[in-house]
Amino acid sequence: SRIRSKVVALTVAAALSIAGAVALVSTEAAAAVGVENEGADCTVPALPSEGSLPTNSRLPDPFRKLDNTRISTKSDWRCRREEIKRLAERFVYGEKPGKPTTVTGTVSNTSIIVNVNHNGRSSSFSASVSLPSGTGPFPAVVVYGGFGADTAVIRAAGAAVISYDPYVVGREGTPRNNKQGAFYSIYGNTSSTGLLVAWGWGVSRIIDVIEQSGGNILKADATGVTGCSRFGKGAFVAGAFDQRIALTMPIESGSAGVPIFRGIPGEGAQSLSSAYGEQPWFGDAFGSFTGSPNRLPVDTHETVAMIAPRGLFIMDNPHIANLGPRSASVAALGGAEVYRALGAGENITYWSDVQDGTHCANRPEWRTPLQQNIQKFLLKTGNAAGAIRISSRAQGNLADWRDWTTPTLTDSTPNPTDTTPPSTPGTPTASG
Ligand code: MCU
View 1 (cartoon, rainbow, N blue to C red):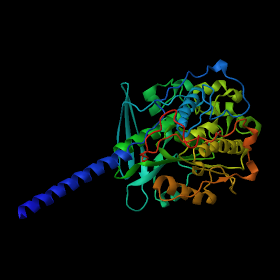
View 2 (view 1 turned 60 degrees about the vertical axis):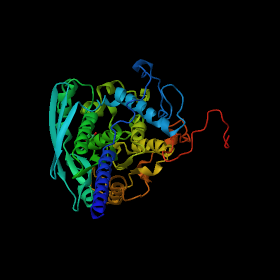
View 3 (view 1 turned 45 degrees about the vertical axis):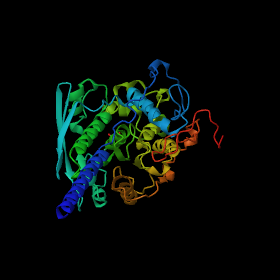
View 4 (view 1 turned 135 degrees about the horizontal axis):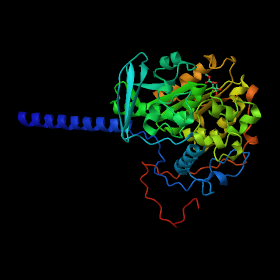
């Protein structure tokens, strides 16, 4: 009987360790289930041709599908978002290719190395890592370039900082027909994709490497992105095009960033043709629209909406009209309607109520909301409500810009823990 109890004990121990191993495997699987683009499998009707686009001085209705019907459920949003993504790629930013055939690399306490192979071409780049104090694994914020973002507050809040040099992935100062950098080494120097998407592609490949790294140093499901000015444009677009990014934080992004394209001429912000010509930030196709933004079938309130329901903290400067802060507030208010319809109105913050007018200054007003956003979306320890704090110096009015209303989306997504059998079609229900 002593032997027997020992066998039982061993069996229990074995069963426990198998259960433990299974739990470990499924936890790892759960941490790696992030998908860059959840609507990749949606069937999208043919996009309108450039010549057929109507002129519309108001913001396009984010809830109206290409087939001209409006979505009615929250689960309809997934494929409507895909339509917006395709329109934004075709007419504004250029196409973001899917995950390359091979992505490998390493994560250490000090750096991330990314190696990409696709269609017989390869490229590599790296980014440096700076961990917060304490014990990992840590969430991380990818910080574009070296200015504007408050890296001390990010690390003090408990997230690592990944210092990312976007220029190694997409250089500035090149003509559109000879683009350079890791993205263009893979997809060609004449790719019509602009720098903002190329830079975002680099962030996506960093996340691929974090996912594959085993999660001992950095967590794969807790990545944020931020940057100021041209890197605010970049952070905004990166967050829109990768649904694994849990928190997007553009700072003072200006034209080609958050401000609605339709508002820029009236506000006197950097003109669209100036932004288009200054650097290949936009995709090449945007060149046909710099003088006629009213023909665009998408606007940036829908780039905001592509980020919904994920964390979004837009920081803006109301003191510099060149940055288009009024137009940026309209983009935030318009996009926030999609957040609200999805039941996630608390996940978006827009904050331009700041004193110092210096572009990309380190601002005390943003410290608390920055910390709260990191806690809520990256550490997952907080639940602070989002805030819309628009400076009275640069207050846009959404009502002037829309002719659509926000629908009440019914939630048709089945509750996975609900065991009641589905109702038979045609059977009347109590609610009628
Ligand atoms: C606001 O972002 C840009 C702006 O679009 C450019 O015209 C200017 O040259 O640079 C700004 C910037 O990136 O400043 C750091």
